[in-house]
Length: 384
Ligand code: NAD
Image 1 (tube, rainbow, N blue to C red):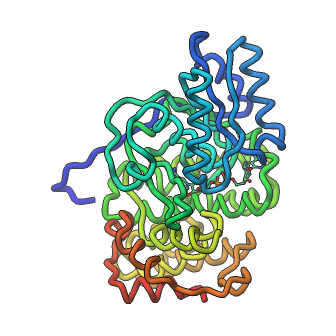
Image 2 (image 1 turned 90 degrees about the horizontal axis):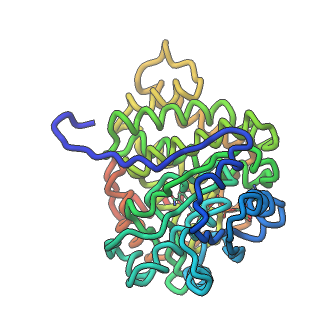
Image 3 (image 1 turned 180 degrees about the horizontal axis):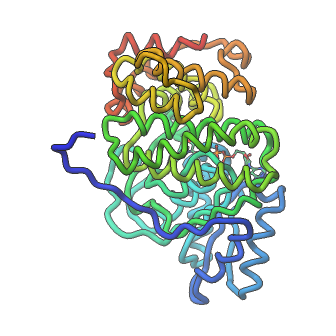
């Protein structure tokens, strides 16, 4: 943190957390409101949508459902959901699911009420006005989308994951109910947890970090180091799911303010070109980028190693910092994250546009170590 700089910190709306906190959602919706629940088929088939609709019906709240969100939601699907919102005269959105559903809900609130197109907002058009309230109920512990002013929407035609930014996108109400995570597929539990760790680590070392974001990030790292292995083995354990939900939320609070780094600049193009989940793309690059960044901020990497439970007291700063990379590699190996593209059956080819997109990405500017075209190309190819 630079003591001579002015910082700002956005806080989310109300956070309600704990087992059965879902029951509180109806109290937060007046009888005049008509929510659109934005979700996907996986969440719906797991019976989670029914749990939410029962709570709303119990409070005589009229609502509508759009359950057609796809992973890394494409803009065409968001437009379909926005048409449902308008056609039914809805007044607020509830994002129910992982980051894809929550981001889908944010984007619906945006385009159902504003003049611009998703491509325009994705290209940096500012959000002009207030938008309908967004409530978020995460069913994965990873993206932190429930507290961020960010929505990631895919432009499949141009093979880009557009990052739409604006404080208006920060949800007004967040419900963190660990009972909704019991049905998360184990692979999703592992990859989303790795995503949360990538958010915490990248925001902790970001050039834009400050004392508040650093506190959230380090607490998140501690919890993830302690609970992610358990989460990847048994997400139905309420204590584990609750701690991972808090950890991913705190990582979101950190990166929404401090920003991210090169892991994300690389992960987005790889996700768009090779259709890997966001969590997996981040997991593949996180230890590689940490190793690249080590020389710039060894004190912070030593603190990460300490937060991850490594014994660094007797080590030199350089060796203590290296333990952070080792801790992440060991954790990811334990939860079954592949290290290389060949393990994933991908024959990796680097397209020049992937490098262009990574160079232009906002997180690249916040990464603690500057990287040129050649270094970024080398990092992209590292897992080959
Ligand atoms: P996801 O939302 O794509 O969900 C993955 C799969 O898990 C889906 O098939 C879904 O149906 C299923 N699922 C989710 N919860 C479940 C549950 N409880 N039970 C059964 N199945 C369940 O995955 P994600 O990793 O949470 O979100 C990824 C998206 O979030 C990406 O598009 C990524 O770019 C975005 N993202 C956004 C932000 C942000 O701040 N807005 C941050 C990071 C990532």
